[in-house]
Length: 554
Image 1 (cartoon, rainbow, N blue to C red):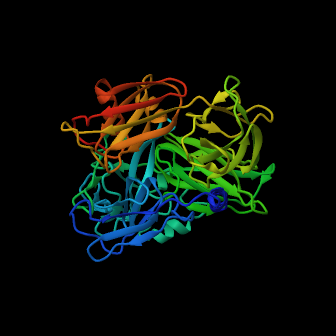
Image 2 (image 1 turned 120 degrees about the vertical axis):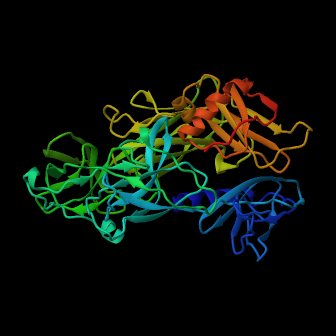
């Protein structure tokens, strides 16, 4: 990713080196805590895009009163972002040539703390239990539970404290960890590949069954918690139950034979998520490839393994999902498959041929590994090297050569793999027959949508969010896969440069859109109040919206 970003920066800078320099503008304002309103000093503020001199835009550090000022900014829409130790905030600003925009307030929500104790059915404290926050979110229309925040281990009093992002609904999960210990570092270092638990289940100690606050054994009965900025929520006590402890054993194979492998296991009910911390135990097998995992409650689990290949290629990977019912599981076989090169071709929609454009392809692994990407010309072909066989989100963007971010009618109309669409669906690497790769179709009939969010008196509503969804999207899954979002600038203006033609529904909200079940339910509730929009091919539509009433949800 760093190399790709550097290449994009160089290409853009070269494209602009010979153009007349626009008059520079400035943006200034103050950074305050979203909860208390107190100014935040020493916060880093930066703007996306490019400076008026053609280089990256400058940044600033807030003073003791939380004030900042960004200089040398080009005209156009600029995204201003503040980053503090425990949170971020972003605003959109539209600059005219040489304009000085003031009063742009940024209010990051600081991380909060959830604290409590874990007790059993007899109200006795439970020590050495792993407690973490879980976020329920959609990825390509699939609702998942993802680790969200830090992990804590109950002390000798059964107490825990975890730090979590504020403003988003989370579930709190307490579970026995394979490396049951009061030392968080020990969990990160790993567990024994062959557990020492007795082979006779009757001789094993009972196990803490995974429990969600306040005492549910599944997400269906869990109670969500949403913290205010910087809030410390005490008394989040979790009541657990105990049950039998089961084991699972098997062999990891690579290149047709057992081999020494690094591996980890996790409950299939919780995913790691991209770029998030995950408290899953890790270990390494011996040369015989054998593993034995114990301290398992009934449920579904995944064993994953990897083998580091020589050179810069991504490690070979393999995984196996199994279920524990009411007895131990044996003879499991985890096969580590070599990473493969993914080839593809980019073509124009036959009804809309056009000059050459560039397409940026990005593959986001569902298991949270590294993102793979490639940039290629359309029409043309491409290859992404060393892709592990797993599920991916596919994201594709079409732009003119040099990725000049001007208004354009180019867009990626479809992406298929093995004959199935993966533009809004998960792609399973290896599912295509033979050497069939990705097929990307680029169209040149995109429409643009601009507008203004205004209050009853006609004044622009700044720092709000616009949600745009296809009119045919009615379920939470369909909305999560296809929903588009943007925010309003200091004048209430918003817009999209390029959208596929079709029928849409537009609505305005005060809180940032997120892909949680609560937010999806709110969008479904608001569909009847949304403003219908029809975009004809290559049309330019202007829209006026008013804020919709109703509670904010995350």
